[in-house]
Image (cartoon, rainbow, N blue to C red; front, side, top):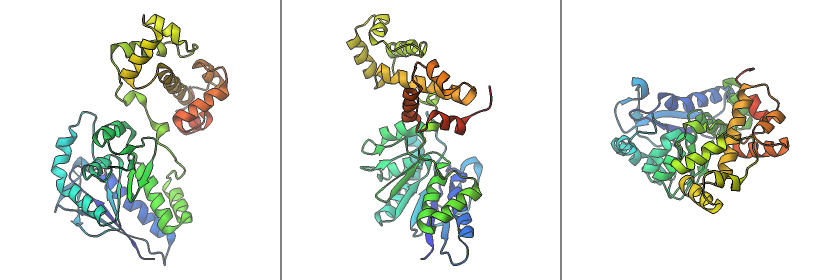
Length: 323
């Protein structure tokens, strides 16, 4: 087996850590695999002669060259950033990405590097993911793609996208697994203290950071639901408190938020339960009752559906310390 050629595409303002994160883990895997292993031939490439990455870090680059896998790191992105203005100066990079894919070679984006793939029209008709905080923005920008914000890594016909920052290691471990074998990948994860058993980014979502949909009416409904998480869901009483019919309540709430009041209530209950699991010593049964579920089994199933983990597993992973 020959060395796998991996090219990392550096560009102005890209995250320096995402330029070097994958190569560093591949280097570790090569040492772990030992003599005789083909390993990885990694280069940092660019259509530019000089690249200044995030934080003013100067990245030494080589000219564009053929690679078996092209890795596109992310960049600093805030919810109010003008993406058109940010991506417009990167036409040379998106052209290089497009040409690499057209040659039938694999392309991988890290985090919001997916927006460069979208600009190169590589996500059209494909499944993809990105950082959960910007998944909606990617879906709006690339309506022909199927955005899967719950996934850490998505590969569809030679195009791979990953979730935020540390998901570059989930991708790198999968690459190591394919090229060097499961044992090398497993040992690399252990040596690097990288979790090789993650399956979803859902447990990491903080709904407080997401844009809140709706206007005055739906927010009033949300506020009433938030104030009575432990109460039985009563649609008729909720509609009466808002002085509308149940039919009007459901229609207006769905128009403004894209979901039903019950769906919102369930997500709010899970959000509260997550906080309690992270910060208190309360039993799962007690937390279940606090958020309106008398049957801990029903609560646990709902919690797992929303977060990808059972309550006990979630607490073990995200506990902040005793209350």
